[in-house]
Length: 340
Image (cartoon, rainbow, N blue to C red; front, side):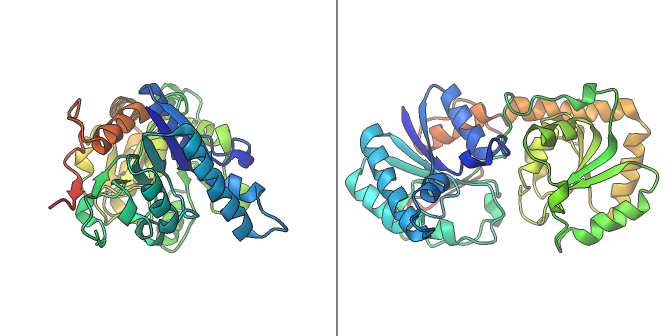
């Protein structure tokens, strides 16, 4: 089918974030046999500004979007984090093109729902990387809406490294992320207590941010990588960093995530609850290389076999068009429906 994918493809960032979810979803849909037209809404809005006025750029972007729909006549409009496209625009699209399915995906922390709430009345399916058990209440407005969990996905053309086969490492432990209030104390304490290992922290300062393939290469040169999201209380939620780490073959140690056993076994990812347990397990696996490599390889295989972009987007299409599921997706029961 023809699919119009409206997302932030960051054209003007010169491939600095080529590993983004936007790109992976388009890749997966294309591998499943669909024609995908990428509509980079932020970039189109930016180049259409006059005298730097954002509103003019947004209005021109929306007109361009409508023309694209007229030309492509897609069966599906798939929205990413499309904060510049509001409910009024989707209402117009619904009225003019009533047969087009509209779905949306969301991979960020569900702390600010304003962008989702403005569109919820007009979409058929919302895909989110937060488990439905802890999904915030949303006014369904008597609409036949589905909210479905999807795992963060990898892509073999992007996550192409196998750190478990590496011989010469640059560091023992890797962490990437801002040291915000949810993580700063834990990371700083870990750094102090792990004085005898090479522990590198990236992304907290402008100078330490890793972009492009340098980010993936750095992961591949790390024996162990720490996954520490801002939220470890919400069902199945983790930043996409988890799959980026695992799919590049480093061994992942993560603070426990509710219901994570739906996705991973304990020989594919190492989990901890408290700082002392984290320290103990890091030291253990640094001193037991073969066990570390085994866990890393198991995690890599699970990521690439089960949570690759081709398989996850196939699930998305089958859900949107209410087809029978073609296989036993591990997360298929993570669905909320407002249908009466």
